[in-house]
Image 1 (cartoon, rainbow, N blue to C red):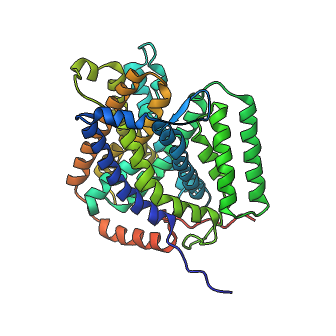
Image 2 (image 1 turned 180 degrees about the vertical axis):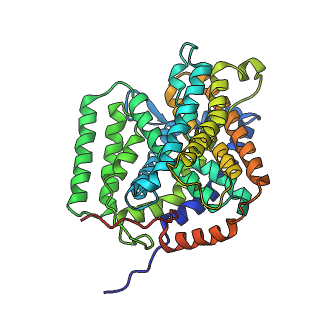
Image 3 (image 1 turned 120 degrees about the vertical axis):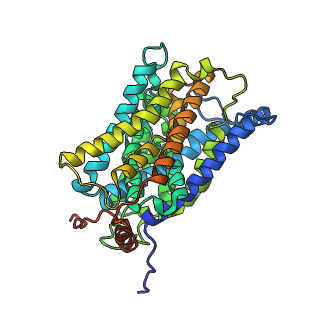
Length: 426
């Protein structure tokens, strides 16, 4: 039997593609802002809202480029998110309670505190309460792009912590979208989606490994979910849970594992095409005529406060308390100041915040634009402040030694937790 060449771990690919893709996302966002505030604004607006057809559901009407990106391509983004969640919980940095405790506590606090600050700032204003989840999200690609600019000044342990918190954060965002941003339910379509999902699960149990078949059923599931009233992107996460997965104890990703193969195949498309395209289509805010009163209106102010203050308070505060109470260990090779800096970077909400903003105020162009202003203000402040803290923070005295150990662990098995992997279940 011919020997199968080993593949690189998804973790290494993820760290590299997210950093490079994040820098491309930053460029796409800047380009969108330049275009939206130039003579090209009308052409930009006309292009992203151009009707392309067909009418897939009466709720959405004729499909536009913007809808194809937000409801179609972002389902692929969520498919990748689902694959990462499954891999990390089954065979990665979240495979045991010891590995889960700190990022889960940090992510939970990093979602709750921003939501609370938002409600304190904007919750009393009629019609704004449903935007509470907008500042609860973290944009892993954008944050990794900022870390990439720091080079060796950002320890690998911080990057891994950020990735792990963002994965748990994504789980929370998916649950929020499914539970709180779902339109009127079409029971028939929902039943059809459940039946399709059941077939996909049965295929997994029967040992079917053809990705083509799973992707065809994913397309059917996406359409059924679109018709059901549940946001169509949720189909991506649900489909990911059915993709077969081969555990690789203390070894690189298996080249015969459907989940590993699909994850490696999707990473470059999501990082270098889908997410930057989403950023370009959604970040364009025309600032012409913008007044101080509009900038400091309850909605943008609440979102910006949640992202900038809420994230750093929630994440850093929960990490500090967890370590002091003996619940978890401090990150290896990182100082408290560096942990504070990466906590600030978690306030970059951008992609997921823009996505939730569109769901929170459907059809209300004014509130969506105000939400974008708040997201851009909060994310920019978090990015600049986090970058500054990490740029000038003195390195940990053992950083070089720890970096070598972490790099060896990533090269060996794609896991940087430093904890022995559990044996596979029978």
